[in-house]
Image (tube, rainbow, N blue to C red; front, side, top):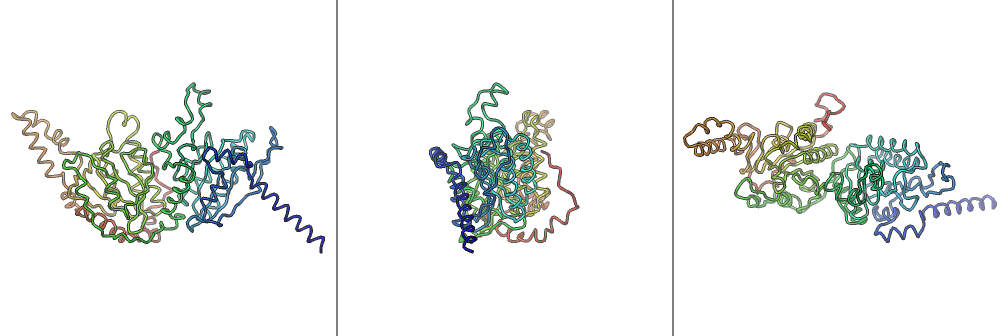
Length: 526
């Protein structure tokens, strides 16, 4: 018995030794290099992210099986990615955190298998998935096994999409095929100085195309938060990135089977605010829509997404009487609030996310229409603009529209109206709901009369006035039932909260979904 006991202790010691060896990752020198660059190690990120003592690791002992090109002598602790689950603010979350100190966190066959296992585990349990991306890219030594493992990962992510929230944290390099899986997740948060993403790095770009460009310009946060629209939120550093991820998770349900988490609030749901004074005297003068959002939301809180991209439209999350709500608003201070290609894409993707995860949507609308001109036409504004229409018509969550000023042409339904699917449409008395502005309408309808008149300027002014009085107000739309009510702007918060109360059970037992004919999904224009 003594011998058996001794053998058991030896095995236990071996286990502890192996664990401690792997937990050292790439070693103290490699970790110190990360610290010099202002970065945490992968395990430090996990410790910071999860509630103390709640993280359970999966796959600590996984190893690659490659023998070619000296890989039989190459040790890669935990296969360069730490996977597991724990609690974030008391709720379960699954993580895959790439470890740059372990062979630069390169993506090989078993690195990919660990990622896939983590996503499948998250999907099966109904828990959000967070990927902490920090990798030198594909592990070329593994050839086709690396190639195939990317396919496993992409399929796993796609099959989990719409079932659980997926958030990518871009905290280091992420280039080549490696860059696809972050952008395929629901939200991407990128650190300013250390996060880089691109289909190819500067050296490869120069070799293949002759273009000389720096890593920062090609793949940094400005490239993706401003230009490409692939980075939703920008973070200062690792800690800020992890904090913003926690903040976002607090607004989202754990899966599509839950409602978003409601929190207690002492902000009066019927609080009045002087909003009318925010509007300039002339309807074509800009105002700041952010001021409206801050005044009507609980405690003025707003978590914006894609705030640096397509700034003519605003997307993000607020709370109303403790409920998370998606906000989509046009921004008159940027391109007069016109909807262009990028704005349509940005809005449609956000609508679809909120609908997938049972988050009600509220629009704040002041837009003269979709942007016109050759560049927009040739770029496919009709195709891209239609994405918003698909998204609204497909949505089954509570949909509430507030028309503040202009609601013209395609933007009328692109920003949610009754015909496309709104449950409630409310208008301020300043709202202008019509097909086009009075000046444009008069120039077309009365073109001949104006041209032949003795005093064309007087006739034109009279016809503009007539058209404006007839259509450029919310009351004609209310008479037709296209607007549910014309409201005092100071009651906007109260009206939204009452509408949300009424619509709270809209999706109970998926009634709205099952009332529709069966189909796989709509063929949205991509």
